[in-house]
Length: 488
Image (cartoon, rainbow, N blue to C red; front, side, top):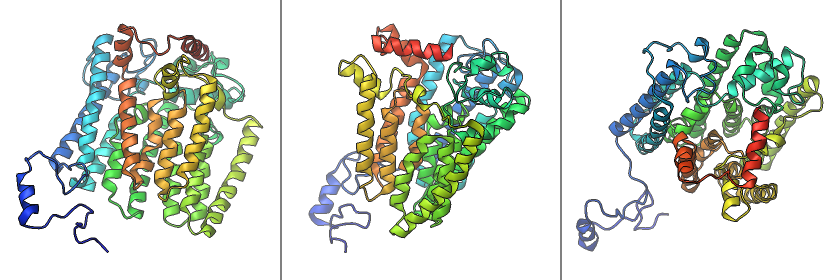
């Protein structure tokens, strides 16, 4: 039963007339609104303008990235074939900027995307679902037309595939340098790092090794964008099954600048993990418990970090009899996946330990290490943070809202890694978008802002010019030397 003085939305309802109305009448136009503590929502026109800014920003970046070699495309100064540049190459002429100007312009554009993203979120409920989906599809398709932005991971995927399928070398025990004669080598970056990718993804990539490099490259790009759209559709489906408006959830994920420029724009294989992971949540919400457990194992076989979702999936499976069905699905899928891994790779596993020992300057562990006088992200600090993550997971499992708990646990996992990359936040976005907790959404959005600001190219240039370098300590220099070895 609702209290007499409470409105249906949970806000305070002041009586009409008398003191209540008088007080409201005296409030300044922009003063504190007592009726609601929620953020003000914007209208459809504001939302459409925000989406237009995102579309324009993505289009501008793609036009410049396809025009010729630039800081937007790694190694493009040395090798930049037309099939990598994409179909828009030379379509708009050859707009070019100096590296310094491009760095400033691209950094400013990324920062500008943040208020556009915020406006889109505030206007989500004012826009039609159709308009939102058209914008999401258009953003993904525009990015498909361009080359991989800022990173070379898509070529590393092909490098590991060709290492195993063409050259008969186990990518979990051998490195890409072993195929330095292969055409893919000049596009790759991690030359001395055994593959950290899961056995299912590696096995599925093997057939691409037999295709021309250009064809394999475009198949991965198309598959990545298709997986991205499928992943967003799963977020939409989950919101619907939860009885919630899917528009804010879809935009929180798919309008995020990191999702656009660092995840889709770089064609990361994270979507091949996220699609089955969020698909498993959708299946659980539809009470298809065995299928949920089985599909989650597909995500784990692509990237092992998806295993973090399993205890929360079990918490969401109520009554307890449903948990047994989820576990039955887990076992049913895990056995053939393990057999596949053994058949192709023996008892070797993805090289997660070596990759996790690399450090980025603005990772949370490195910043904590600097603040407490350790000089950066030390192995001891990483172990302590690992224990902290376990404690946070145990705390999160006690929450009634298991999706919020999964969001908190995922954010903690991301924050604890010394090799922090901006697109990792996409792992948490669908969970916080579907959760009932505002606090976890605010934390994810704050983390998004932090990652954008610390990973824009101009940030490092600006700080270095002012004598600030988080990798200048002995710990940081040792980590940088090790990273150079892996890339040499």
